[in-house]
Image (cartoon, rainbow, N blue to C red; front, side, top):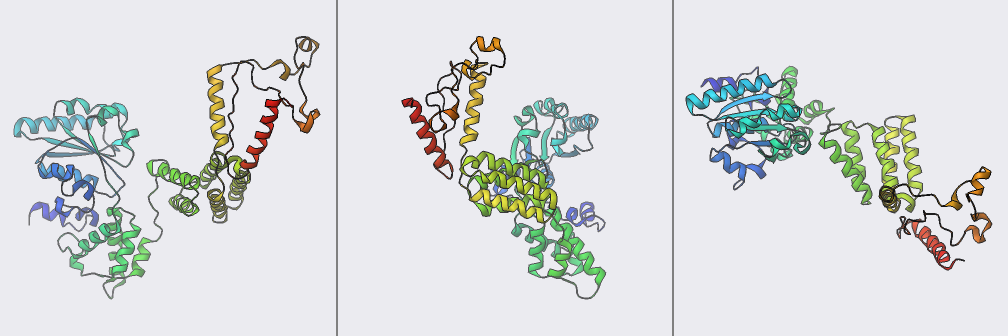
Length: 441
């Protein structure tokens, strides 16, 4: 057994580390990148290096893939973590790369885990060494590189998106760990019920590291209990309880999910809206934040098509503040379902946007004299309030033909009611009033 094999078999190392793939053939998942005819897979098979960013959720194989890329190209592999590394570490890596290049004509692959934690100046440090070929760079991140990686580095590195592993991928990985006598749990001769493995695979939520950690914990519980060496559903449930789905409270997952919730409400799909609400609550999202966003949905996407919607969201918000969890969460769910089912209108939202554009475009236009208050004699003498028509004294409470926009502003109709919900009646009423304006009576 080689030194490397002895290291892989070290029982003190976590199972997830021991089971790390040693070849591309052992790599589970990511076939959209590594399958036949895919650019990254072909590049690795040919032993060619290029700088890249690996973007994906935890436990999808970013570090392992970087190691395999270096191995396939027979390159020196230097791994740094942005959590602990600094410019000093980068300089040391550059010097090691120069030595390998000069003495062994060997390329160096520098892997930076959590690249998004480096600031702009730290990321810029790599650029000259990528330009002159001293280093090939691989950055790994769980955050969107568009926002977290500087454009100069992005332009020199291709981005590959890794996907969360499927239940089938994770089940296969767990079976391998159970049967592998060299690095896995094969020597313990554990038997596993298939439903138990599937339960662990689902609880891992796409994360290989989490799946193997739970399997190792389950094996420990079985050993401590003695008796039959069987991984049952009961044991798997005990290990998997208390887990949360992926949610990062402020990162890409967070904004993707709130976007999905909002679009499901706008798209009148109560089932999808309820699902995304529960996903965010399950992930630990602040319910008060959700209450605020739900109120925003009522204003932006329902508006006057159903004015009750906004009031209902405020009631749900207040209910959560008074009742807490879980009763208050049910109030939020009630509001979300109501919004999804309500008639939709963004007429006020659009109207306000257009009005703001005119405010910016036309500057400080004068208020028409007849609309100004005249609390002093001087102001009355200047014509303030003269010829103002008090609507309540007019027929049907409407001063037909009166103008309320600035004189120099072209006629505008910002608010255009939609033919849904209450706005049907609002639109009909406005049409009658505008007809009277045109006829001045």
